[in-house]
Image (tube, rainbow, N blue to C red; front, top):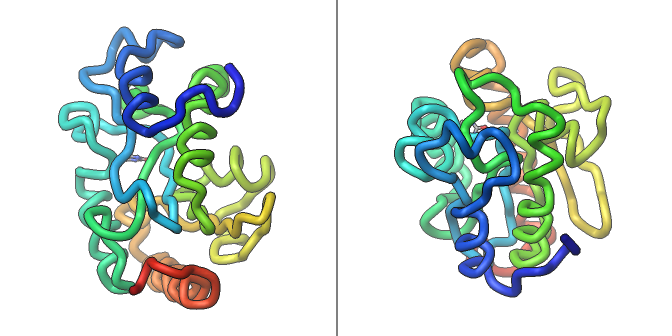
Amino acid sequence: MSNLPYQSLEELRCEVLNCQRCELAKTRTNVVFGVGNPQAEVLFVGEGPGENEDLQGEPFVGRGGQLLDKMLAVIDLSREKNIYIANMVKCRPPKNRDPLPAEQDCCIDYLRNQVALIRPKIIVCLGRISACRIIDPNFKVTKQHGEWFSRNGVFMMGTFHPAALLRSPVNKPAAFDDFLKLRDKIHEICTHTYF
Ligand code: URA
């Protein structure tokens, strides 16, 4: 598969909804393609659907998702308005285990195609799995969260996964700081996110 075989998100979504590339297809209820504004300048990338996402077909709709929506609202972002949210893998790994490297390999071209169509200026990686795959294989969230990286003209940041914040609320202030850095970067380089 080359990087841009599908010319629109709707075409790509139709393909992904029927995907049988890996074993996760056998146990999923719904494919979780992604949600948000196709013209978004900011793309958030999580790890993979959990139970609620699998049942509803939308990313980050469980408790972690509610926390994410609250943090987004603080900096005037929302999935209904001005961002896009996707995951590394589009189908739920059983018992919410980490997606296997082979499963990520099967799915990564779908994310690449989403990035090529949305053309975000900023990508925010939620948690270790997406930060290691997208920013740097040795990315350490506790040490490098909130740092900006530039890859092919796109600014990238890794921050805490919302589910990790629910487990370790002590990291919430640091995560809020990351979101404030994100707001600053949006003001600096984005043209229609806040307007
Ligand atoms: N965790 C993720 O990484 N993505 C989701 O969509 C839900 C939970």
